[in-house]
Image 1 (cartoon, each protein chain N blue to C red):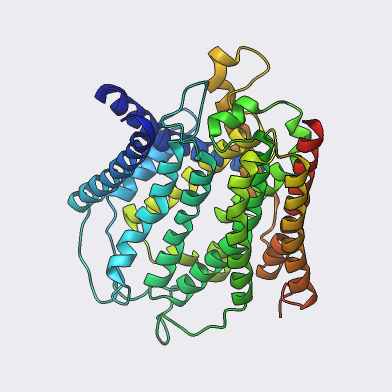
Image 2 (image 1 turned 45 degrees about the vertical axis):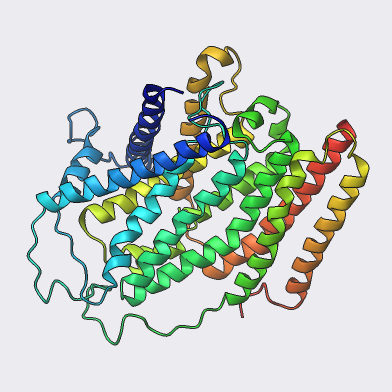
Length: 123
Length: 319
C-alpha cells in the first residue's frame, strides 16, 4: 500500500468495505423481517390513493436548457483545477492571470448570453 | 503501511461514518425541537432520549421490505447503496489533524467533488425505478438541482485550490491563514449553500417536498432501505460540514495547540456548521423550482466567477 496506486488501493478497499457493510446489513435485515406480500400491499403507494394511469407519466422537463448550460460550464470548470495549482508559481505570474480573465470572460459572456436570451427565467 | 495500520485506518473511517451522522441526527432532533418550543425525544435511553436513533434503527431493521409490483426491482434495491457509499468514500481523504488522514490523495479536492455528486444518482435511480409519478417528479427535481448547484460548488472549490496552490486537502489546511476568512468568504458561502442544495436540505428540499410530492424519490421505500437513505442524508451533512471546515475554516487549525488538539478544533467547527444546517432548516421556507434555478444561475454562478477573479488578482499581486 505504497505510492500512487497504494493510495487508490486503500480508497478501493474502503469502497469494498462499504459494499460489505450494506450487504451484511441487508442480509441481517432479510433474516429479521417478515415477508407477507399481498396484492394490495404491492400496489404503488403514491399519495395513499390507488394510482391512476402508469407510473412513468409524461411530463414536460422545463429545465432541459439548464442541462446544456451545465454540461458546457462543467466541462470548462474542470480545466480550472490543473491551472489553479500552478498559476501563481514562479515564472507564471501576470500572463497566466490575463489568460484566466480571458477564460472567465468566455464563461461570463456565455452566462450573459443565456440570460439575455431569456433561458434563465422560468418559461 | 502494515496490514494492521490499513485495517485501523479503514475501521476509523467506517466508525466516523456510522457515528457522526447519528450525532448530527440527534442534534437535529433536539435543536429543532427546542427551536420550535418542543422537547423532542425524551424517553428512549432515559437521559433526554439519547438512544432514540438507535431505537429507530432497531425498528427499521425489523420492518418488512415492500417492493411495489410496478417498480424496477433491481434499480430500486440498489439505489440506497448508491446514495450512501459515496459519502463513506469521501471521508477517507478528509484530514482531521496534522498527518491524521486515512489517505492523502494529491488530487483530494478533485476526488471529493467527483465522488460527492455520485450520491445524487441514488435519488435519481430511486425516483425513476419506483414506478410512481411523485417519485419520478422528485427524481427529476433532484437531477435539476444537481445541474444547477454543481457548477457554483466546483467554482467555489477551485477558488480555494487557486489560493492554496494545491489540490491536496491536507496541503490546503496547511497553507490556510486566518485572513482567508475574509478573502474567501464569498466562496465559503457559495460552497455551503450549493452543498445544502445538493443534499436536498431545507430550504432546498424541493425534491422531497412532503406537502407536494409525498417524499419524492423515497416515497415507496420501507424498512432498512429507507433507513439507508436517511443515513445518507445525515452522512451528507457530515461530509459537507467537514469539507467546508477543511477548505474554508482551516480544518484542524485552532487558536492554540494545533498539533495536539487538531481533531478537537476540527470537530468543534464541524458541529457548529451542522448546527447552522439545522438552524437553516427550521427558519427558512422552501424555495420554488424557479427560485432555485434563479438563485443558482443568476446569483451564485456570477458571484463565484467574481470570486475566482478576486482570488487570482490578490494571489498574483501578493506574490
